[in-house]
Length: 596
Image (tube, rainbow, N blue to C red; front, top):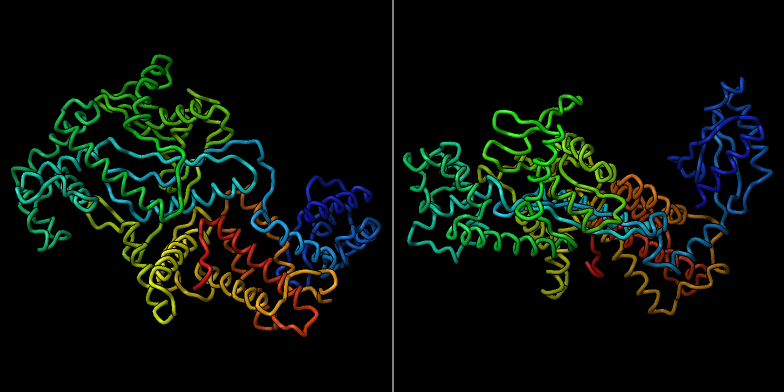
């Protein structure tokens, strides 16, 4: 890449001046008039060399001019000692040609070729609803997976699902109470009914009665308000705790049948959502399968002092390492999330022994939890712990604040997608499109709007979702990028209709280099950094700037003109933009419609 070549000649110039430097800073100036790249090395080393920054910059400039590569048109000194580099017209044109040649492969590199990486993300719990927090994890995990793939690695996508545990016992208990009503049949239970059952169990577990249920069930669900009487609630906690153990042990046939029905409904529903989100997992792991392996691991390493007994439970003393103590096997003899995590990660590396890295994507509220788990794992499976990275994202919130499936006041991922899709449909009302095509476009635009809203900020940041801004066809949004792509494709079709093909670039190129051209050649560099830092927001930011430059170029230039000798080059530039923005949106997990 040209950036690396520029860094190299800067280091060589510094060495000739007896300046000891192992790394140099190279940035893109905010103003394009200040060049394509700029370095502050003269300011950084002036004091060491006992010179004024401008004086050192002039000496560096002399050395740079001696070895200036053909890709650089000119080098200039600016301000107190910044050194700016301007790319040549020939280099820019060659890169535009390369984009046309490589098309969907433009931006890829082979830095991770031959390596295998597993990315675990989304991680919804069967028997509970797929909430917008899962949408956030999915968007981040899918984008990180694609960034890693774009760098040549083989990526295995994994989903870890809690199909056993107290939440399951609450749902099954709630369903047991619901099916006592003769008007309700288990065969009719879908995700909504299982969600209600979970809420019933949660309220009862905490000793709350039917009167509290009215805050979310309302009159329409009055059939179930009589379930939570004082007598029923009084014994609920004990019953649910006992049921939790029965489910884990699979000791009751009737309970197993009810459990299997709920699990099947939940997993089928999740698959429908994944299809919409364009995610397909290579591995589906479950707490009820791989998670069981955690208990014998903890019991084995209890003998070696990694864990210790405390009040009938088995714990890891994280406080000895500046962390906090966590329970790995509870007083009922059941493995907690922590123990299950050990079983899961052991299984990952058994299935994929050549796995170089395992990336786990969760909300940042689990960061402290993972510090303890990874510390314990380091004592048991040091190699696995060394290859495991926890990538924490922020929380996705609406104006109502944080969601809670415990209270039933949950914002499901599906309801958010449906709401945004309905708003997009309104925007498309006046467009002359067939119903089937309009539906496909609305879905692609809605998913794109949500994913972009999540990915445009650094992964650790919380996000307040703004419905109106997210679906805007102008500015900082997913639909804006999709619409810019559609506009480019429309221009290319018009060019094709009048016989203008994006060829003969060397003969037809304009003398002035546009901002659009300068931005296009940066895409591989953006991909490299975003992939190395697991930072999809770098791609999102770049694409927004790129789309802005294309729309400005479109407004100022007549691209399709048979009498313009540069029209073929302009068409080539438009095609290069379309290919680049499509690749960038793919990296964000966003599909592009051909029409909008």
